[in-house]
Image 1: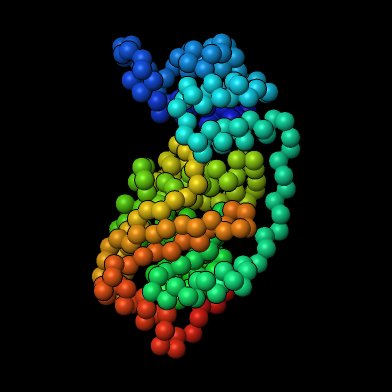
Image 2: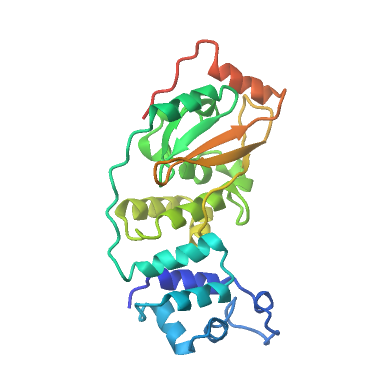
Length: 283
């Protein structure tokens, strides 16, 4: 049978748990990393055959208590527990059709423009750049001049020409790249076969081994604050702290990067915002 999103997620999370993580004694050399199927089944309170059918896509209706037991057995955090339940819900109902995205509200655009010394931008469900202020245009080398597929935060992190200078952005643990990939999975749990999503994942996986590896981790979580590693001729810092605010529109976020006080970077962003510079074109 073809692989299901639920089975792929269970298998990936099982592979990332060492026996010691689950309180199990060492059991000699293992052919594959992670827990065995029977070990997960025992911890979840289900039979090994039932668990095997779940991973193989042959068991179509896992119940709520079974999912909760699996979440405990695999030590899933809150967002990943919710993601597990959303994947299982695909067996009960058809995936919703994506709605036409609304325009970025004028109030959000006004908020971007008030952040005169902080690069700030709005992203959509697949992290397309929907709007940005002048400092963000400086930071991202004028995204309005780029082709549509490059006006995307995932592309900026994983595929831009300077990505080799910023490996800290794509580390497997606590990097902006890892958080973006996890958020992409979490938001699209009920649309795993969406053609737009599949095309994006295929393109990024082909261009970036780091993206492909993170996608295969099957981590799911909303984006949060972190640090952005940058190399830019007009900036004097290699790291910017950033924060993320969820917006009312589904799947949209506002990112704001914070430069060190009294730095040339902060002054460069302030200069980009003022002095009569024309605003970037809105896509």
